[in-house]
Image (cartoon, rainbow, N blue to C red; front, side):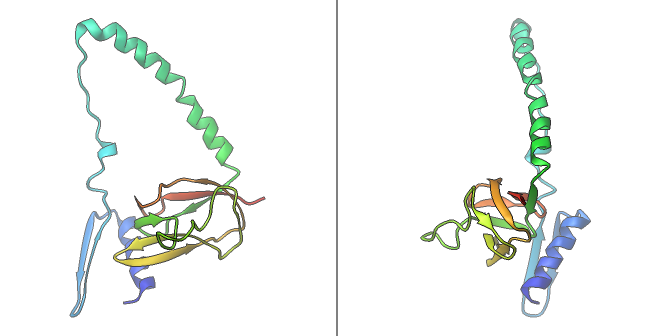
Length: 159
């Protein structure tokens, strides 16, 4: 099984909604965990506030309503950009190795086929190449962070 087949298997598992798949052959084993079974961000904890603190809680909740409109306007601003997404699950690295400079920075001009980052999956380092030409507007993931399949990595201005 080569890297392309493994990447296709990872994509298939991610789209299927399964949280874990194990595949064993004679000389190798693969376990793919998508992480969908344990998402702490999906869990909401509700705690009742003491009666004396209720006015303070109401005052604190009111200012939070105004910033909720800001992400919508930010999403409108980002609509003119192309989003480069992760083709696989793994660990995102901005550099080819620790002693080398980052592949791209904000403001870097890129051409189709230029390397943007490396994603480590199952001890394999996969160089992710640009599918578009343009200028890097924003890096959306921190270096050495885990990424999911189809997670946005970069915003590119194609103009």
